[in-house]
Image (cartoon, rainbow, N blue to C red; front, side):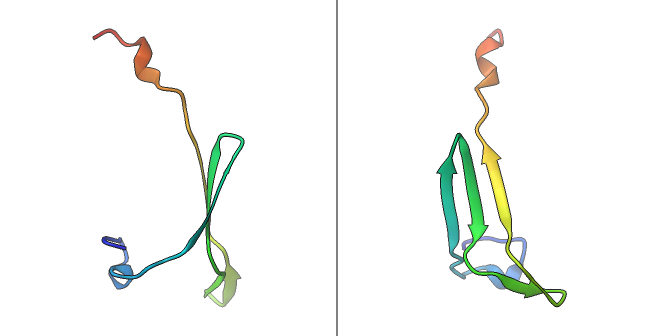
Length: 58
């Protein structure tokens, strides 16, 4: 990791599970971790949208 909002993460390698399915990109933390005495897994889902700039005048 070259830059992070969390200074202690800079210079680390953090593995992610990456899945492309049905037009979505799913990212998930590789291993669960403990926060506030709870075991959690972070998940993030992205969906690609169509290019809306194709309808704009130059």
